[in-house]
Length: 230
Image (cartoon, rainbow, N blue to C red; front, side, top):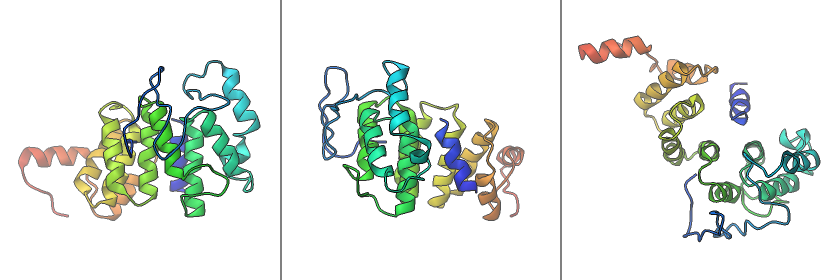
């Protein structure tokens, strides 16, 4: 339940791998090495600011339907996500559905998709490098792939830009738990909850590990220089 709630929360809201990418006239690359061309018969468009609302509505009506988003249409999900992410490479919700698909299928090369899953994240990052939500999603992908150090690198980079986003701190806390750095996990948990992050999962994990301390306790410990007994 906690995992599904966290996924839903992220849906409301990436370092480039491989060789150098030559920018096109509008600032995005024409080719993403190993992941094909961004040129597309329809688009590509920026999910955050399509040329017209009708561009996005058309794709979501005919391709990124609720059955596709929530992976209920098993036969049609891969080609529909592929189409959506070629038209809107940085479509946040479609990228989240893609990660859920990887978790369900337990493989990164899905039949019916043009590229391995990580290519779609690389393409999204290359298409709009300023879209920090893509980086948040990329970090979540790395956590799901049990690559927490890469997730930390992604999310720490985002934190420098989105210092007021509780989603970033929450997921950083989870990643730091995965690498066993409980001090950093606690620091990010305090920040996430100070920004009113609603899910208790990170706090619960720290409590279970015997590492949770209230912010006031941390402050008083820092002032006295005496660590509290566990």
